[in-house]
Length: 195
Image (tube, rainbow, N blue to C red; front, top):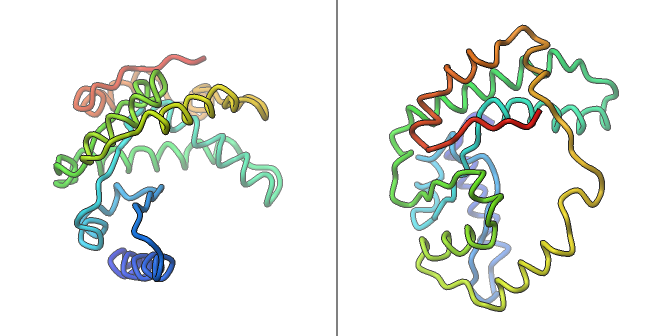
């Protein structure tokens, strides 16, 4: 579980098995590869990565509620204050990794602000295709726009969270914004206000 290189070797073998005997195609991987970029690029040297950047304060609050919702369905009631502390620390570790990782500026990575993606998801996908040297067809763009128009994100209910989760555990939002300022400045991420 702690050997990222071995995990990617197994992962690559699995994808090769799935691809065997079939026409070539692009694989799209979703996940948290940013904390092990060296191992990912060693396994997939021709990979291209899109990396979304969002206000870390919102990330900590959102991931707290997202994981609490998931865990509550599995194990029952969740201590939200303990969860908020855990996810704030995980967010801090992720930001520290982002700021110190020598591969963060690798030319195979396209950095995208979360707010830009929300404002124009199809345009952002087009920008990524261009970054990869591919063409996003008009038919694909039309299909994406149609899907987005007919499948609103809140069609099964609104996902709600609040940064008060962080103030409830004694954190000062102003201090957190100051703590994460270098990250926000590096990637052009503005402070989000949702509450």
